[in-house]
Amino acid sequence: MDQELISKKDLLHEADISYGQLYRWKRKQLIPEEWFIRKSTFTGQETFFPREKILERIEKIKQHKDDLSLDNLAQLFTKKIDEEPHFQNISLSHLLSNEMISQATRDLCQLELTNVDTLPYSQAFTLFVIEEILSSGSCSLEEAKLILTLLRDQEESFIQKPYVLFVTRKLGVATAILLHQHDEVHFDSASKIIMNLSLDELQERFKQQLLTHGGIS
Image (cartoon, rainbow, N blue to C red; front, side, top):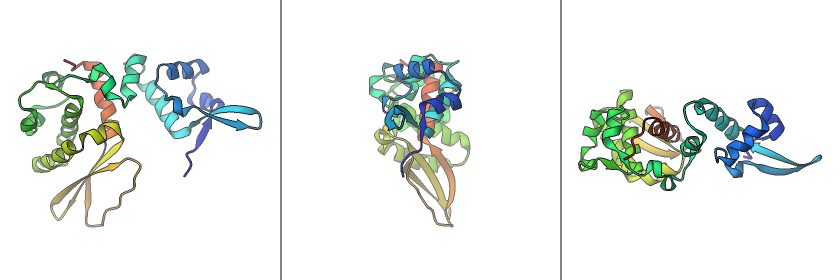
């Protein structure tokens, strides 16, 4: 199905932003170049945007613009983690002291950490996901360990692409599934969905906290 587009004129009106703001955000790489779509109309060439994506992005920019600089916002939205020095070396002790993860999460993942304080981004984000799971109270420690194994096996996949984590329980047995955000999934009526977690949204929150509180070695 083709995505719904919105014209530049309608976008400026609906989002209540100026032409200058739009193109400044583009220069700062807050809005991807590929979202600026040139199309021929009866009045000539016009610029259109993927409606849902651009409106969601502008809303997020507005939400964060008072807390983060435009450069930090660009880092918040980037998928090119390896190119951002801010996300290269993350201090475990800083994550703990800023309550981004708890001691319970560290204890659960202790075998994965091998007592090293500096973590790569992917491992630090996995801890953040486990923290979200434990703090929700929806899963037992054993179920969290099951999810941890899945996340560790698929770290590079969900860091670069938008994934959703589903956790279901059937007859007392939990199953964890990683699914691309835009795919559909159907469960039988006996399976209870106990967690539906957008890793893309969670990763954005993780990066925002890193940029706000630090945590970089």
